[in-house]
Length: 389
Length: 193
Image 1 (tube, chains in turn blue, brown):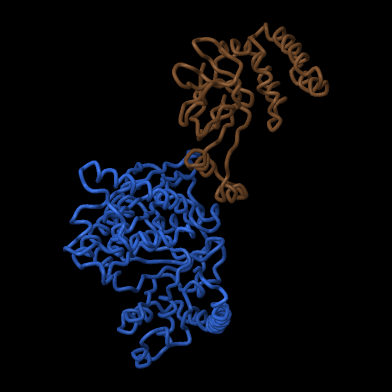
Image 2 (image 1 turned 120 degrees about the vertical axis):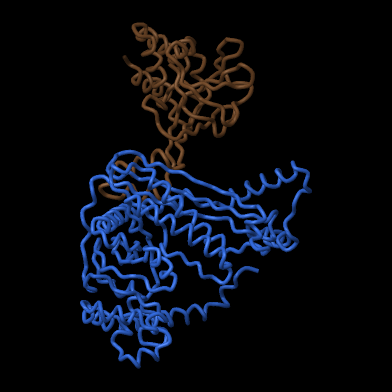
């Protein structure tokens, strides 16, 4: 049977009502939050204390930078020439019901030489992982979380290699990643040994980029975080009241995002920058790569742009990120063109996966293995779903 | 000089389609005579009757973007996998060195390479006019325009002999289209020197 829509109509109606009530609650909370942004605009020291306090850590509060919190900074002019490199990855996750236990990571990339008049260079870098150390690390089947973390690392390696391959004396260079720069590694399913290896590889890439004199940024579309909202909420409380707050979820600011808070930014404008408040950032900070962020009105959307601390402390680099990312967005419906193209290169279509699996089956047969089969579960799913393909 | 147009993406006895990524300055031009090696040493001849650039939502969105810089345009044209499709109408073939103005025994195969024909070969192919019917019978194509374009190119390839060639071609058309004077008139107007 297909989804019987008549059985969910009441739930859909209820969902609409709940969403409207939530939007109404956010509308009412927003002016107060913006007023707090104004009140605490130049109280960076106090806010830093709040962010570093135990409740501040618990709520993952961002820390302010050295700019007024309520600024809205217009996009600087984009340099006449700038080289923007983007990389994005996709994957085929391991499937124990499939024909073989393997996974694929494919990184698509683009080197876009703004102002050159030339066609950008595009490439893909696919890798098949099948050896025991990769698919059974520590004797356990590799998880989707590990593959995702490996993909993040592969993207950053590709970004570093391609960006640093551009001539040093040429136009300024910007490496742009899709999503947060602060990769999420502390997953239960990623063994600590793997986390350490991936994090070390990732930070080594950031080291190389910093030494190479380039800028790097991560673009987060439609972010849901509330690190600044949480900071402002705690800042207005007395110390003992702060200690009692377990989560932003139990306050009047429940569900209010930073994106809504900075919704007053006009196209091209960015907010002040902040330092991310998650625990992972301490690992980055220890290596001199604390991840900071600002909000940017891309013309069609409000995005979060993440940059390492050495970018925000170099005004030229920070301006380059601001200008170049906005310029890219203004030609592509509010999203960086280079990221759209890197994704287009990277994506693995289901048809391509079928061809790949056919090739794997033939390779196995050529080497004397019996022709592999899907698991009985996967076979029966295919049989039953035949009409719906 | 022969120039590679692209590779066959589908074919049948009467027509084939060629995929290429970037338009070269000289080709593909409407009415150009092209050839492809078929089975054995045979070559199949055809006329380019259609050049189609497939779009997608990304291209459509970019088309409405103001102030688009050359890098974006070049990326869309050269890098994105949106091939240009060239339609070719089969008008004859060469077997054992001899040109026949009729449909070939077999169509070319997918991924065979298509080349334009040099002036000498165009002159040789258009030395006879028996291929007119293979063009004029295609009511779903701009057949009159196609034939006229081909005749103009063939005349140009003959240099000073081009005018005499067009007069001869006009006579043959008058014979073939004797019962459709309006159509005859329309084609003659298009090839008038």
